[in-house]
Length: 183
Image 1 (tube, helix red, strand yellow):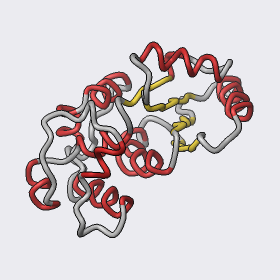
Image 2: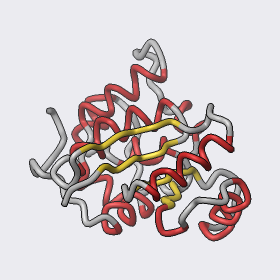
Image 3: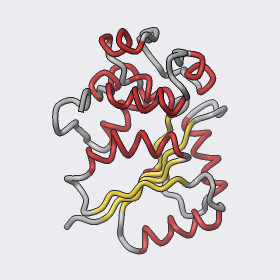
């Protein structure tokens, strides 16, 4: 029996990424896939929401950037201290930040088209580094992110970012159409 899955993400950059790239991978597995940004919601409300998801027997994924923590375990400890109803098995830690997942999906052809440097690995890419890579031809950071999503290759991202690959493997996700690029 299919149910609902809630993907709790930090902010709007995450909503864009998960809505465009990840949600389609879950559509065949659930009746409903909902993406919810939690950073602007009070911790008690988020914690109560996590409890209600469990009581309704639905699934969830709680996504958080590793930020300044030294390890995934340290980040999980921070989350446990903030949310008493969080399940460690439902936590996905993005290393370092969601921008690293965006950039990981750029193929050699797309870095050429976008006129950006090619990075072999994006595990250490942080928001500030990402912002410094934005070509001047883009009006904003958001425009650049939307453009990356047009070119995004799940297969390439899997190779360039360890936490992205871990996420795909953890949930046994495959790109249903073979590639997201140029959709």
